[in-house]
Length: 489
Image (tube, helix red, strand yellow):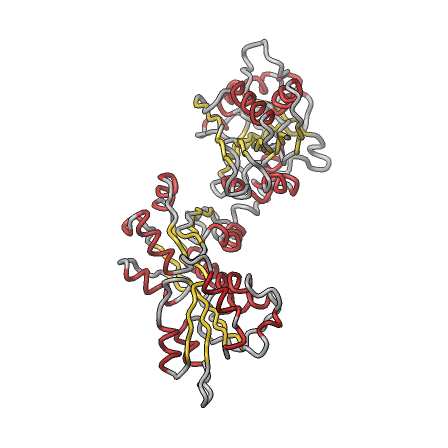
């Protein structure tokens, strides 16, 4: 039993440490803040319990005492507990209080530092907290204490006079008093000041002004406030990315969504994860597939139509030599790439990534007849097997997997409805998302991976804004960039 106090960083899920990711992957329970990136929770096992103890101003799901008691209770119960805290556990995050309580209760614990917002947020806003010869130090201070109370622990006079950069966390609510106190202590009213809200996240917004005028702007938590000459710097790299500010829905199954989501995030988009489908075993548990693979030598061709089909099929082929003289056909470069990971080079990959193209390229059967095994999703289109039979082949079709609809939460539905665009990588994701949110609430900008998916989009009364070319995840990203690749004004 161990409780891990893990720093989640300020918001960008890519800033989680390797150690933090390792611990999330084996957690029994994740106790998380509201500032933790939602994507980080997906790193925990599917069966792990997730407990939201996030605190918002004047709205706490749990008091700090209740959170601490929960950690002790779960630790004593022998569970592996990850306490996922925004920023760093020991930088104004009350991690020391939680650690002390665990120690008093005899619960083993470990502290995993995180990247603090005091450094990361200014960096994402293009503000260096230090500069040679002009700002050679920085002070990090909490803004929670009332500067006018006279009985706090922050010596604002000393903070003002130490020089260098001042970084204030959790200071929006008391900023007018803080600004007045710093000026009274000698800081010039013209000192540059900046407030960065939701730093490192796609909704990041920066207000730049001076120590005297920053309070004239609309500020809101959570923000990091920077005071000093460096606050005038605009070394922007984060908000200038081509999809920054765009909200794009990814409907792929959760286990498959990472590559698409990461590519869109790299371009600056806010990714709304709405996995409309999940990949599961076929109704027979894979028995028909296993039986067919057991007699694979009886076939002339093995046809695979998706990366999912490859992975499910090769789970029954521990040694590629079992294929012997059987040739392999793949629909699409993604399917061919999945085969390559199993050290199989596809004998046939049609130029267009649809079943009709495979039919056009498929050879005629030998004069004595031939057999084809098609391993694919349950309830897939009959075009391919019917076409092969019409060409003279004997065809066996086995279900390698089934895609099932995934219910969306009310929060996910609202997020989808408010998005700028939606990406669809399969027909089933179109149908399931429309069923879940209503076609009228699907974003008007739809980006399809290929013609079959595009047909399904139109069947639901929606227009296809763009279609990937080639019909791959990279093509889907390029299509999104082509449609949305300008930061909204």
